[in-house]
Image (cartoon, rainbow, N blue to C red):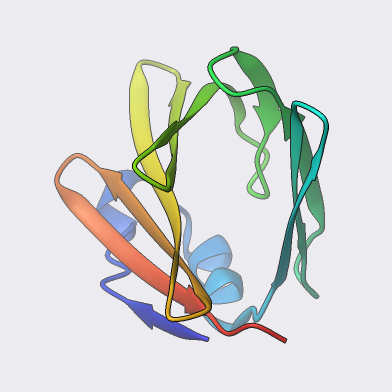
Length: 119
């Protein structure tokens, strides 16, 4: 796994959470059952699982315990997640590049990118 551009301190993410996220090497599984997509993330830090239908709003409690409202769409082969909480917004894009999952996260013009290698 590679990570780039993780400048999240100024966006209100605490020191301990940033340090844990920096060393975590999560396993991410995306599965589809009918029209329901599930994204499961497992790490030594915390495990999360979210299930949703494309284009429908859903609630999510994030790994750092934020309560968020989300909508995920599929645009040109990219899963685009718009995540909102406390008047803030994050855009998370997930796509497959050369057989690997690339996740790009953007908030207030600050972005980071993680590449997950296929197991």
